Length: 397
Image 1 (cartoon, rainbow, N blue to C red):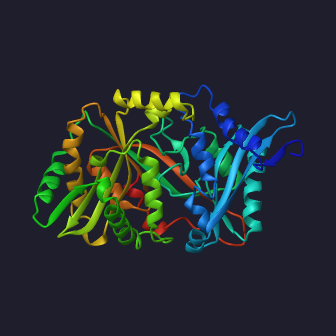
Image 2: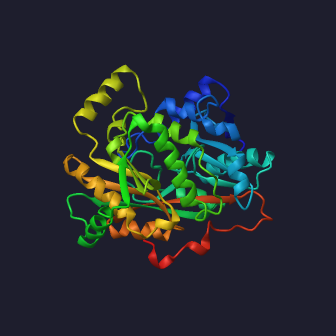
Image 3: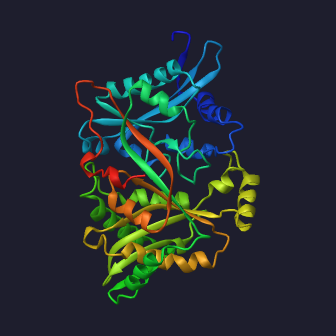
């Protein structure tokens, strides 16, 4: 172990190596899509990442005895999220490593020690320094090219993490809808019936009313998740504005829908085109030529998939069929875009049986599974699965 060297990302040269290592690590893997260099840098820039307002982050690379980079990792925390957990938890992510347990252990030890020095008792991973709609979890099933925002990794990462001592905190399931196959008749009958109720109104996102839709999203989210998540934290509107800014190049307003009951916001669904179908050609760079290439590929209808990235229904209207009615609104949008072949619904936690049942009712097939792990830094504190009492194993893939 002494022959390996951990280096802090303390200058631009090491930061460049932190970014370039993953591109070398996955070279030749047809499923890998490089994150944009600028987005990785932004994740660790307090001026660009709103999550620094509540926390901090650190990055490292690992070199072998020959000076060759063989791994990388980041650790981070947000005080508000840590305080909401049953144990004071930080996180680790941006983990990539050769298939070597000793190397992985040194990376995980480094992240855990950094968090321990700051008073943290547990470490979630692999996650990102932000919201859980993107780059969250360890892929354990469905090793195909992931949709935009979905984490991809080598199959052996599961073994590296579990051997180190990470324990399964919760599972994340993704479902695929093949648009060449009809939805179940029962699903559309319910959708049409609910859609025609006079007290319901439906609107898709419009940039001219962005502030209203952001507030509606926050209102729905805070009502929908407060009783579902043990570690619930109210949504910060700034996070929504940040996500909107990042998604603007690919966001189609007609694929972001809101439902209202007599004018009150009760549900939202957000679908984004799968930009990874274009980004895989850009190698993480967004220079002028690649911007032109992006626009050209976009105009060629290269994005044939859309991904459901976020959804919420306030408790009073859950199981009312309102979710089906939103799909009814999206149906004509899909029909007028025949190049769209697939909808990905991702992700839903094993602790959310209602949403799992909804996804299955569409006829969607289970396609991918990610694991979010927790490592107990303080061994005196017992490990607990996330909302284990809510998990219904009989309903899971």
